Length: 488
Image (cartoon, rainbow, N blue to C red; front, side):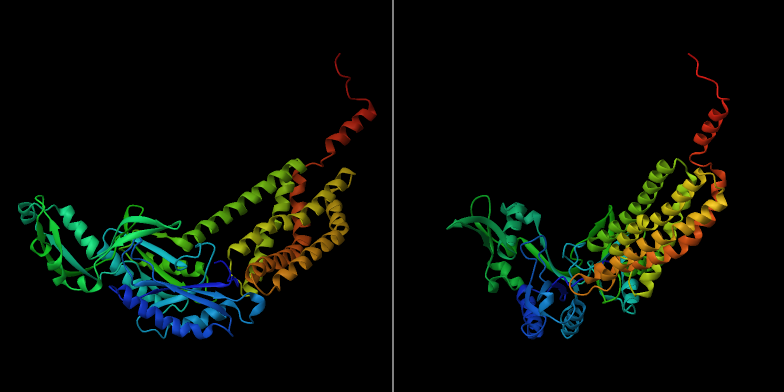
């Protein structure tokens, strides 16, 4: 999970009962604003903006809404973003008709939707609905996941209109004409645009609210037949009330349901997704899982960091192999990297941090920071071997002679990272994650390296010659005059 930062913007995704209209949702949002507006002014909140999406967009539903809470700059408030999130969520829980929760906007999700977006896919929606119900029921006892819900609901009230095609054909009315009339008057339809003083406006037609509120309104709608006459729409259609899903989702060509939810402060996105993966594995109806939004970005970014980490190790090893002209000496040096990584993870556990994207970046940094200690010892030991010393004497003297440079560089690195570890203020979460990894990783790896490198070098260096061994042998042979002269 990306650590919480005081970024200054919170977003709350709210949902009302299925079938809620625009006017009713507007009333619900008015109640929401009454609860949140007292936070504006003397508190940490600068302004609150609530809006109802849908309608003229890709969805015609108005039972979803979003609330954006803009915070004051960090220097003008004395509370953290997590504190404001808790306060906003407490107020939202007082709304009986809406459900939802506030969360910090993340760059991974581009500020849209809930952080948890977990997809379950299977053969039929009915089977997936049963698995969904079990997962949501189990999530109610999971305090870290807030208001887990799904995009598949079978309870949306619908009025199905069936066109009597035979009668419409006899009266000379096409199904397309019936569809356009229903869309224009009962729904809404954009028919044109006009420009006024440089501004372009959409022209949207729709019947007045009183003329589209009941089924009897169909009798007042007329369509023209091929001869130009008017035919009452009620003579061409039959209506029936039903309930069904708002839309049917797909994932990788499979029928899918997306579970969405928020995170409690201090609970990581990685932990939430791991728990959902475990619960989905228990459901035989689920044949595949996936991620959307911020969850997908988190999985992709996390996997990329691990690939970068492995490539960094390989690249450093190859560079050292070229420098030392050996595959053994770089292997001795690279063994310090696992100790640094272990030290960084221990530091995260001791300081209550999580293994997030920023701490993973710090772990990648440890590859170079930890390798430098081994390079100092191995390089000097090779120079001593070039001067004629045996392996044991060379490594002991190298470890003693390089102790001061190693400690000086390590102390300087740790001292430079301490301000990151104890940082506060806006964006402190990211800096603290990197600082903790560097401070603990370098400290622990330095202590272990002073003993591990000499032991490994003494064990493995016997299988390698001194870098200048061939040069010394040639010089010795030339001194005795036994080397044959080159052919002319």
